[in-house]
Length: 280
Image (cartoon, rainbow, N blue to C red; front, side, top):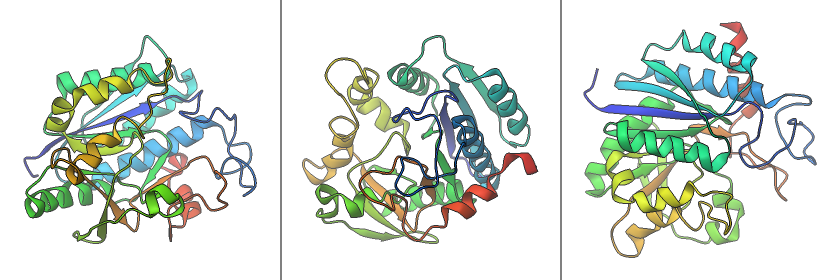
C-alpha cells in the first residue's frame, strides 16, 4: 500500500436531485433523464455508491470513505449500510441536521477542511465509475504533478460540455499521457473532482462561497470554483484541472438541448448494469 492518504467524500440524498428536481429518469432521448423509466433517485444513489466502492477496493492507497447524507429515506440508508459492508477501507455515514444543496456542500467542505488528509475526492451521487477510476486518478495525479511542477486537480468525467458548449469547446487544451489513457486540460468542473487538501485550504474563500448555493445571487461552479482551474492560464496560481480521455466516470445528468448528453465512446447502459448492487 502506498503512503498517499486520500479521503473520498460522497454527498448523498435519495429524495432530491442535486440540480434537476425530476422524480424519475427516463430512457426517451427527448425527455429529461437517461437511465430508465420509473427509476427513482435512490436507485441512482445506490448504484453510484456500489460502483464507487468497486473502484475503491481496487486501489492500493490509504483511503477512507465518508458519506455526507442529506435526509435519505430509511430504506435507502439501510441499503447504503449493506453496500458499505463490501468496502475494504474504513467507511462512515454522517447524517446532516440541515438540508439543501448549499447546506450539504457546507457540511462536506467544512468536514474536509477540518479532517481531510493529503488528498480529497469530492463526489456527487449520480456518477458511475470505471473499476480503475480511483487507482488511475491517484497514480496519474502524482505523475502530472511531477511533470508540470504545479498543483494539479482531476475531474474523472470526460464531460460532453467540453465538446458541445461553444464557450468550452473553443478553448485550447493541452494533452498529457497517463498510465492507461490521455488526459486533457479543462477549466470547468461539477462538484465531483479530486484535489489536494492544500487547494482546499489555499482557496477556501471560493469553496465557502459555494456553501451559499441557492441563496440570493447565483453562485455556481461556473463563476466561483472554476476560477481555481482558470488561474494557471492567467496568473500562474490555482491548479491545472485534467479530465480523462476516455472517461473514468459517467455523469447520469440532465439532457439539455443535445440528444446525446453523455461522455463520448462510453456504453453507459453497460456501466449501469454492472453497478447493480443487488447482485452482490
